[in-house]
Amino acid sequence: MTQTSENVTWLTQEAYNKLKDELAHLTGPARTEIAAKIAAAREEGDLRENGGYHAAKEEQGKQELRVRQLTQLLENAQVGEAPASADGTVAPGMVVTIAFDGDEDDTMTFLLASREYASSDIETYSPQSPLGTGVIGHKVGEDADYELPNGKKASVRILKAEPYSG
Image 1 (cartoon, rainbow, N blue to C red):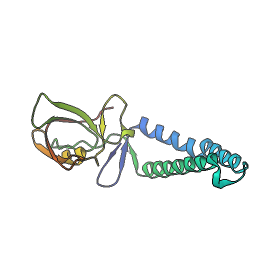
Image 2: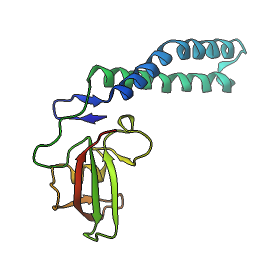
Image 3: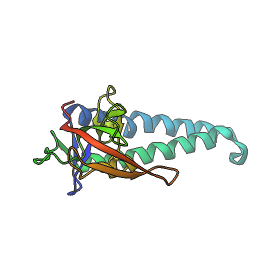
Image 4: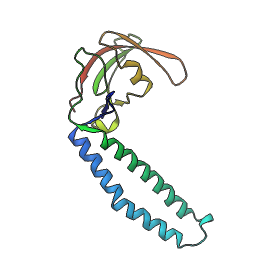
C-alpha cells in the first residue's frame, strides 16, 4: 500500500482482494461469533466479575476498530501500481537501498509502504516512520537525516530507489 498526497491508497490487486476478504469476514461470520460469545458470557451472571464477558467486549472493540480501518482504507484505494517518480525521487511504493552514515558496507534495502502492500519477503517501513519521513523526497546519491527514537539524529545515503514490482 502506498499513500499519495491526494490521500489515495494504492494497492496491488492481491492486497485489495485480501483486505476485502478480511473485511467481509469481520463484518459477517466474525461479528456473529463475537456477538454469540458476549451473549453466552452475559448469561453467566454478574457482569462486574465476568472475565469472559470483558474479554469478549474487548475483542469486539478491536474487531470494530479494524473494520473501520479497512473500510476507510478500501474507500480510498486505487488498484494498480503507484505512479513512479519521474526524476528518481524516493516516494512511497518504492524499494529503497540506503547506506548508514554513508558507509556503503552497512546497507539495508526496504519497501517504503504499509505492510498490507508488500509480500512477506521484503522488509517494509511505513512512510510515516522516522526513517520513511527522512528519506521521502530525496534522490539517489543524496544524504537524508532522520530522528531516532532516543532523540538523536542519524544519517543515511540513498543508494537506489526503484518502484516496487511485488
